[in-house]
Image (cartoon, rainbow, N blue to C red):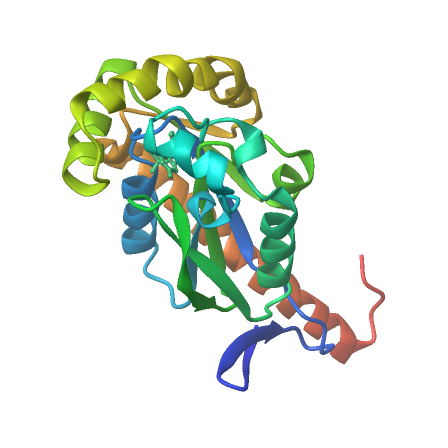
Length: 245
Ligand code: C5P
């Protein structure tokens, strides 16, 4: 693999000058299941340059005034597929796969809105895409080379969510519980848990399960190497004039 930097961004090309796509890992799981922890541990153990982490949070739709009012009352459904801009998400993931630059929205959970600044991301060796509905859209699913489901007990997820939403997302106990029972839990049952069938690997307990995370990392290493070997094979064939298998 050759890395070429175009205007500061990396792109990978094989010997024939064809661009090589990054390896995409989709991580799905209920709210507060430990998806981000699993993703950051994968990045840490992978220890390869250029890994991009993309979160579904970036693709929450912009709310109108009425929806903002509902959100303030913990009555807007942020766990329904309708809450996400899947078109922008698909486009972003596709562009990253092609090694192109994207400007990704930064989401603010306190104001329920996108911040005015964006985050610039580039194509990478590995792209990790995490969120509650990463397995929901068939086209997005197809873009993932490896699908990981983080399966953490519901009581652990609720306890973590209470703690996080109150300490970091400007919520109160009553509001979190109201939203959880009316929307978060039903959405988990209707949309998230059934999507587990698409997973290649299910990680019980989330981020603390380092054995599972290391197995994932081993597979990614093998896949990256294999891509390199295939390219080297191609190169060898083109030198020897032997037909490609
Ligand atoms: O980080 P995590 O995967 O838990 O983020 C998804 C959760 O964030 C959803 O379950 C949704 O209820 C919640 N959310 C929220 N307020 C927003 C946007 C999302 O409570 N403005």
